[in-house]
Image (tube, rainbow, N blue to C red):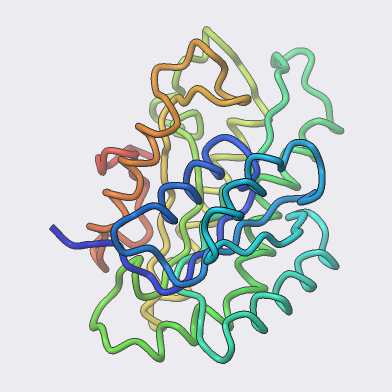
Length: 256
């Protein structure tokens, strides 16, 4: 089985839930990345204490402030990452930050829809655009042939709730703005895969499953460590045949 061994990784929304667990398992792996950029909106806040503790244990973790809906914040983060990489590229970008608003079809509002889209769709687009020169540099400098998540990749954390075919658990929670935003994120992923194919940058929409996090709730079917273990295992196996696809944490293809 192929190993996931990027030199550098950036994870958005890494102060809690899936993002924090991704950083943790990357840092504690057998062959951890030399640089793990763990970003969140407020690195000094109380909600980032667990992340700060983790960074204290693992020197390769660099905590960087980044609000995915703020262009100024994104630009500042790119500058810091560029400086830390010292001329190298960024191998793996994981657009994990996301929000949800629990509304029904009747109660959905323009304000809620726009806020969710701003974080879940526009944010990943802007972050990917901003870091793309570094990702391209990683692809160009790699001796590897083809595509892989160790070479150069963008992983957008999606949801099966964004599958128009499945419309998962609509009777349990309509969450219209969230579903629409994840369907849009899937299209963004497809567009990215087509645009950056010639640069040999792998782009994939990843479903983490229904996970026991602040967003997923305590009744969710998966623990965060189970989900992330599966995600990293799946990422290690992806190649050019998988770019532009919609897969879950177990590596199974999911209909758009």
